[in-house]
Image 1 (cartoon, rainbow, N blue to C red):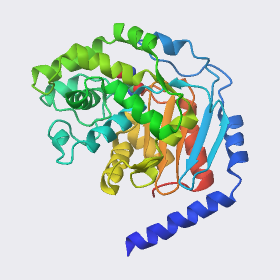
Image 2 (image 1 turned 120 degrees about the vertical axis):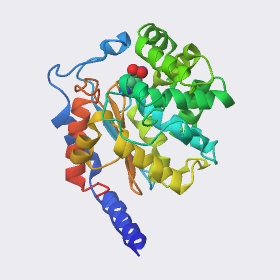
Image 3 (image 1 turned 90 degrees about the horizontal axis):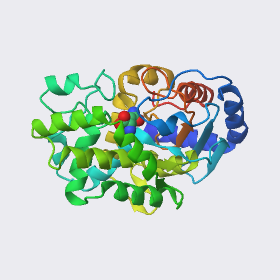
Length: 322
Ligand code: GLN
């Protein structure tokens, strides 16, 4: 019964979306939220990100009925960073019907920074969730068992789902990030020491950093994430079961913004995943997938203006899972 009511609600929201002037609303969001001055920060260990102009701001909405709306710098490629973790998790679940991955990584919010070492030591090398760095390293190791170049596999997945040949691995940015990856290497060595990494620490971190260095636009990311709003149905066919798509959405809601997941759920009310490149991917189940990008970050590593814009958009459209 509950399910029937929910479906009707989503249908109503989709219909309302088609009738609503979403284009002008997105233009208005860009005008209101594009930063006028350099607030926030960029990560110190990724030199490439410091060079991105602070006033870049883009937003794109891809709907389940096939429309794409965009505004601002929605067609400018940026570094997807940890947004990659949503897609590597989807790929890992795809090839793992028995759920072997879940004996190696949990599904609990961490309440700590995305690259924290402390919890991993205390909890004997089992990361709290797949969206903190330690968890993503385990997912990468799991993928590398089947395909040694998991980053290339991810690129193929993203290219197919975005319906664009635009995405590419910025190998130069990856090499420079690798030089500043002491923390990720430390996490990988911890995992290895606890028996939770099969490949070498160095090879897993190298592959993980290349995944993070994939360049995509807001439009491409919104399109690539659409299968999560469509109960696991991708552009070219089913990617995940409806249950697994629901589960990824749940982990995005509880863990996608690290130790700001509660605050983001309070302000936006939607499952989201951020990256330190300033992008945030958000899912409105049954309705659309949204990607916003603004490079400057808050203290937790999430886009400052991007979060504010999504809170505004959710308030003005009524899009929320609550
Ligand atoms: N490549 C970044 C890192 O590992 C990704 C972190 C992020 O986007 N939150 O530190």
